[in-house]
Length: 479
Image 1 (tube, rainbow, N blue to C red):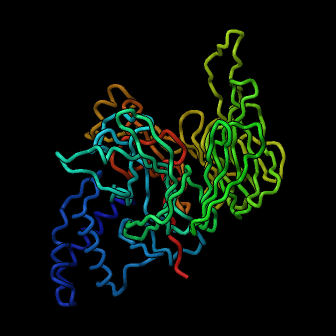
Image 2: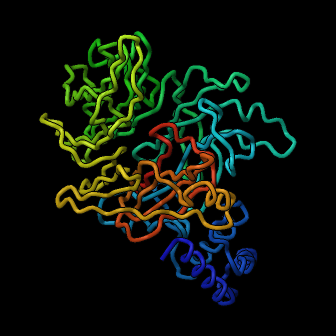
Image 3: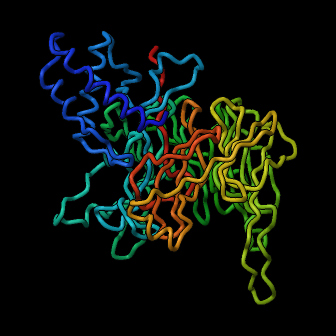
């Protein structure tokens, strides 16, 4: 049963039983809200505040009828379309809360496209429940006729929820709209509650955040032509720095914290001939002791490395072919990378290939690896048996803003980007782009490959020029 079908059944059940609540003390206003639920709900509706209030009233009525209560997990209200109450889980994994993503803006009323993203242009973070956008982080969009300069002056990107779901970290920078280029980046940490209300708690000069497993520290790469460093900021306001693994790298392109918090997986790039990039994967202890080189293939590396939950392996993306070397005139042939997903043991050894593709992500259980394969499909591979499942294509539904144009000039489907797992390990989340305008949606799919992916966001102009485009909030069991 899909989330939409569940909504329809719940709505019909509420309407059928509302009269039985007249004598049980349920407020009249609450009963009237249930009767206001439309007889039909659109499949791809956008979340609006009236609809949220109606569904919330319905959920409260249901709680009264069955003599129960709406479940609270880490302060999050469990609404009917959200996953099961975390107190009913026995797998030890967190549940799923809000989803946050970065939407590029070319005018005040995008997302809603079609429009074209300007690299380095304005972008805002959006919090969403599975049925659509809920609210923006920070200022809300200006109304019709209101000034837009302030709204378009900020670029927020690479959001990341803390492991306990209580904080949200992201990178923010001002944007000079007239020039179209960003200025220095701040790393922002904000406390956030179950209603999506947030309050900034820390701001430091930094970059895209990576949380430590205990949720007390955030690491980020600070790269420059002369001094690329790894920054570490604490929730208490302290900051520290780790030096780059060695003196040859000009860029630190990605960091990822080990599950036990003792080390960072670091990807750097050096240019031995002054032109062709060669990426390396390092294990860098946070106590300052000597780093360990895990992989050096003399080819470019791409994206963020992914630790297995047990900390014994790291999956990453590397090209099987090097960047071309310039000729005597300093001209090189176009680089056509042959990206491969590799896995290397953190104790050392030769990296083993999983298959052609990019963007690997371990399941929270550690038994499967999902990635975007060489054919442009999301593949889920069982690490033990090597059994592979393919996530089906997601058609752009007829009647949407982009469907007619896309079916003429595009492929008629949302083309996937690399996936991530939901906190409970039961869903995949990924960006789908239309391939024509650059407009996108967030899509959710079963890792079993047994259903067509469904959109969980509005149509939006994707901030997809990076690896950390969205984050799914964990909801932990109450102690």
